[in-house]
Length: 210
Image (cartoon, rainbow, N blue to C red):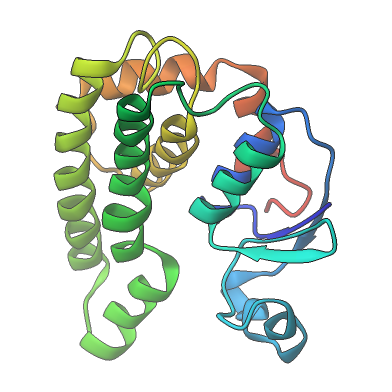
């Protein structure tokens, strides 16, 4: 199994967490987003969208981190990263989508670069942009975690919601987003980050970090 990613990619970080939680061995191939390595013809032959991550597994190339997380859950069901009840699974997926569909796409590197290059935003304006959209999503997640969390984002074991949330908080901390309004969210994140699987997946511990 080969994971194509980049150490600071939030989407690749999600997949690394899930792989670590499930105890799946894999190799890493890095594509430096700072130099647009992911846009090379060779990588686009694997992933036509030219984004990370991509996962080579079972003779196929899987793309888009939410889809990869779902594939991992189906292919390697233990330990489970989705709860048993259908409604509970939907809540967890909604939490994950709040990050993967609503927060992250507005704050990833290519959007930040476009804001700076095409619209002339300075560093302070970019930081305000990022804080706005992270804040909206975190505020909703704070309520959901208060309702459904019992130590983690949902329930008392890690789920794909935690796989998505922890990388997003990492990004928020990098960009000095105020996280004090979200005590339930941060309690769940801190508990997850204490686990060895989350620690092993941390960007600073990746072979291409730096």
